[in-house]
Length: 102
Image (cartoon, rainbow, N blue to C red; front, side, top):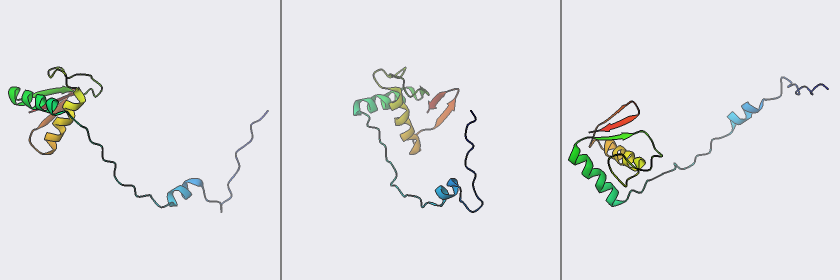
């Protein structure tokens, strides 16, 4: 058996992609996602950074615990450092899948 051929479009029939592009865009409010970090964890991160002067974090967002700061997830360390970087309190260098904050 031969599979049926797709229906042919006539020149006056608009294609579906044209109809989708012509639709008005819905304006949705931006989604704000925040990460809650415990005060003790935040203080442990700050304490380590000020004591050592440099903080190194592997780019591994699912890692259960940071290598140097015990009891604090690696993702929280990276996010707290990103927060400090966005305020221009620290500098960040990324090389070979590691973040260096100083």
